Length: 116
Image 1: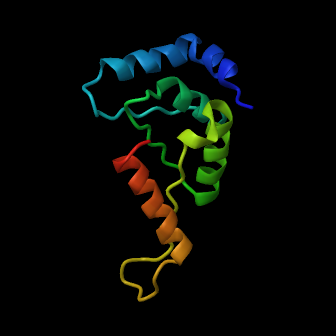
Image 2 (image 1 turned 135 degrees about the horizontal axis):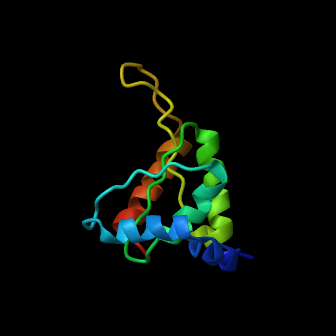
C-alpha cells in the first residue's frame, strides 16, 4: 500500500508547489537546495520526482538515509527508490568495504544506467 494520494495533497500546498515550480524553471539537470523539516523530505521527493529524471537526496547519516528510503517507498512504491550506502572506509585505509556494500552500490549504479 502506498500513500500516493497523501503525497499529492502535500504537493498542492503553496510552499511545496513553489519549490516544484522553481525546479521546473531551472535548467535541466541543475540542482536546487531546499531546507525544511525532516518529515517534509519524503513528500518533497515525491512532489519533484518525474519518470524521466532522478532525485538525489543527501542525508547526514546512513540511518537517516535508510529511513528516508522507507518513507519515500511508502509514498511512491519501494521499486522506485534506492539507497546508495556509504563506503565505510577512508581512502587511505587498507581495509576494503564489505562485499554487500559494494554489491548494493553496483546495483544502484546499474539501475541508474539501465532503468527498467
